[in-house]
Every structure is written in structure tokens, then in C-alpha cells.
Amino acid sequence: MAPIPVVLAGAHGHGHRHLDNLRRLTVSGTVVLTAVCDLRPLHRSASDGLGTPLQGSDLGALIDRTGARVAIICTPIHTHADLALAAADHGAHVLLEKPPAPSYGEFERLVRGLDSTGTACQIGFQSLGSHAVPRIRRLMADGAIGEVRGIGAAGNWVREEHYFRRADWSGRRALHGIDVVDGVLTNPLAHAVATALRLDGSDRAEDVADIETELFRAHAIESDDTACVRIRTVRRTRVTVAATLCARAAAEPYVVVHGTRGRITFWYRRDQVLVERAGQAPDERVFGRTDLLENLLAHLADGTDLLVPPATAGAFMKVVEAVRTAPDPAAIPAALWQQAPGEHSRRRVIEGVDAMVDAAARSLKSFSALGAPWTAAAPPSEAHPR
Image 1 (spheres, rainbow, N blue to C red):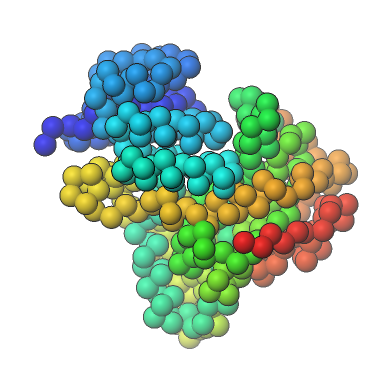
Image 2: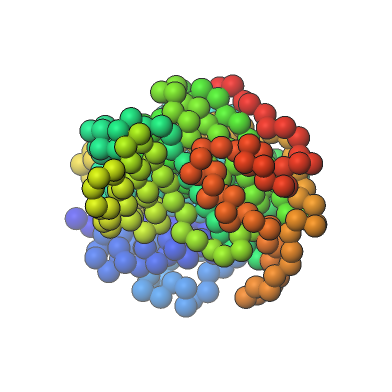
């Protein structure tokens, strides 16, 4: 088969990961990068091994000129829906980075537009391509850890102050009146939310019963850099996800399924699973992963099921909407965080946050229920019925 022509929208920042993947698939003869859509020209060294793609800032025009069958959208959050729909209108199928939209209303507009054009769309939750996900779901269904009591997830990450200055939309809830919702659980650690919901089999919008949010910020930003959400699914599962960008030390994020006779821990970035059961030795394995772009190409070639079609991001988008409509994140008093040196700029560390994030995932409780000191001055957690 001839290589599939692809256009990449957004080649800087996270876009470099897509360039690396495209380079790999170019070597195998699977794709050819025909164009790069970006407001800033791509340096020639960044396209080594990718030929000489056209460059410009008009995605539709680039698709028309190159005949690209697939568009990868890796641009600021608030541009996702418009660019994905532009690609669809010009005949390209879409790999759309997460979050697919900054609000549930925009997500619905996106889905309607894609459906009207018959466009295939894959949402870029790479963790959902892990072969560990169906394995864990089988273990849960088979009662390997007894009855599921709940699912927790934890993300202790470190981000320096320059991270929030990397673009005008960074750390924003809105920009010039347009929703952005660049929070810790809606963007950098969105995979923790999406993966927990997928493991429960509750990834569609109608699977969510209600959501409680607790949003905080140590940095001088609009959005949350430390947050906890508690989701109750229609299956009556309690899903608690806690995360921060102000950890003392960076750690691998994970999802943990709690059962009456054991637990399953999934470090989703490295496809590693640990099964712990009463009376049995721990079982730890590393699984393979299906690349989401390759899965999209297989879908176009022979109808292979998409791993992350838009409908399966519906529950995640309900969480985005709950964060968007929640009160502004409460500022954590300066007495509860400290400055620390970083590689490029200083960073802020919330005292005790690492342990509190892990405790939330273990106990399925919110920060306030655990007595986190920074919750004292914050408004009470709000429930968002779905």
C-alpha cells in the first residue's frame, strides 16, 4: 500500500512527539508527512527524516494542496474543535489530542460535525492503547480481586514556573472570553482520569452520575495546579483522582483498582501492572501498546475498531465540564508552599502534597476529607449532577 499522506497541525512543544512517531512510521513506509500547519515555521532539523513537507497556517488549504487523508491536531486546547472540524470539512480524518474540547458544549459541537461528515476521529489518550487495559478489565470481571470497592488515581508531577509562561493560554481557565480549562486533571494528567473511567467501563457521558471537584493553585495562575475529583458512576463505582504539579518529587502516575480481596495498580505511562491478592505472590508484568495513529490507519484500511472514538471521551468531558463550571481554584496560602530550584526556573512545592495525593488514591477520599491543610480556606467541594 502507498504511504498515507498526513498533515500535522501544531509541531512545537508536544508536537515533537508526533514528529518522532511520524518519523518512525515514515521509515516503515506507512505514512508520509505532506504538510505542517503552524503559526511558527518548523526548523529544518526538526523535519529530518520526514522529507520536505509544505508549511503554512491554513489547515484546510494544506489538506487541499496535499491530499492528506489524516490530520493530527496538536494545538492549544481552545483551538481543537475548530481545527478538527476544518480538517473534516476538507476530507481528512483526525487524530485529536486531549482534551478534545474545553467544554462539553464544544465537545457536542465537535461530535455533531464529525458525524455529519462521516469523519473518523481518534482522541489522543495514548494510555488507552495499552494492552494492559483489557487485561485489567478481564481480571476485574473475573473477580480476581473480589468485588471492586472503587478506583483511585494519583499523579505527583513537578512543573517549574516557566511551564505556565510557555504560551498565552497556559494555566488559563479562559482567554479573551474563550474557554481553555488548562487544569492539572484536564490537561497534563488527563490520562489518569480517562484511564480510571475506562477501567470501570464508564467512559461515556451517560455513565457518569455526579462529580465533586476540589481545585487549588499554588502558582499565580487562573487554573488549578492541584486538584481532586470524585466521580460516582452509574455503576455505583466511586472513582477518585488526585493530582498536583507542585510535588516534592516527580513520580509515575498510576491508577489503582481496589477490591475486597486485593488490588491492581497500573502505571499507565510504562504499561506496568501489579496484581496483589490475599494469599498469593504479587504478579507484576509489563504489556505492549498499540499506537493510536496506527490504529486510526488500520480503521481506515479495514474497519478495525478505533481505540478511543469521541463517544468514549464523553465521561472525561463531563469531568472537564465540572472543572470548567466549578468556582475558581482557591489560592493556597504562601505559608503552605515553598520555592524550590528547578532546571530552568524556580518551582513551587506544596508541603505534604505528595503523600496527600497518594492517600486520596488509596482511600478514595477527597483532599478535604483527608484534612489537607490547604483546604481550610477553600470553598466546600461542589457536586455536579450529570
